[in-house]
Length: 313
Image 1 (cartoon, rainbow, N blue to C red):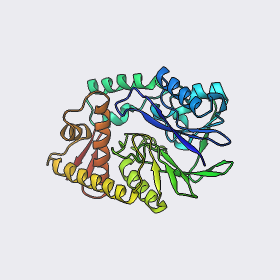
Image 2: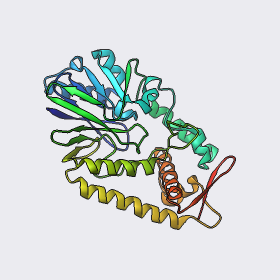
Image 3: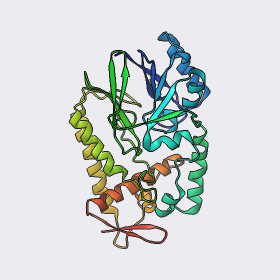
Image 4: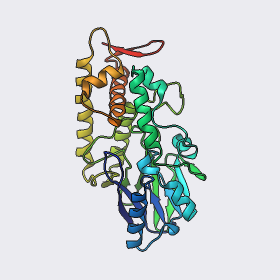
């Protein structure tokens, strides 16, 4: 199976995104890049060098619905007629595209001050403009197979970074396209999200991410082609490094919880005192994810008050 990497610029701190073209029928794009003129131009140029145009694309598979991954899906669908696929837990994110990543209720429960919350919301309203709603979307599920002329890619649902994050596995050689679930040089943020099954709850992002890592380990991929940075060729070593990172961060979080208790916002300021702008939302996401994991592991308790969740030793 011929799979080509396209490197697309983004306006985000993470830098360019790797998207992938499966160059056999039906011609398939895995992720798209953000909705910017620069990204669309880079995509057209790289397709042309490979002997294709946007009109040749018959299918678009999204690993998740962050704007750098899904932003051009609407434009590409209108130009090519391609079907767009996304995991069922993120279907509404792309089919309706009405809400930004900032969930005010969850941030209020994390103790984020009103002025900070509104600043976060404003920043993500801007980020939200880097993607459009997609008219014709089909939801896919775990273990679903996308069939090509010479084989298939199997969906591996790997929740954590987002609830609907997925990888695609080529079983014949155990090559995996990982989206943001596995990244070579950075750890994906466990983004604060409502639970897709029970929207009144927080999604247990970090706990689910550890389960996803274990699942990928069982699949023993030979090479993981990531969305940012280079390939991962030794997942066993990478797995242990990620788990060690989570353990070390858990130890630090636990040590910082004072006797009177702490909320997610306060913990984010202790762990990441100098981050600014959109990274402050990611810092809160990380802090809450670690606090919730510590509760799930019995290391901390949580008092879910009327307005703010507090954590105690």
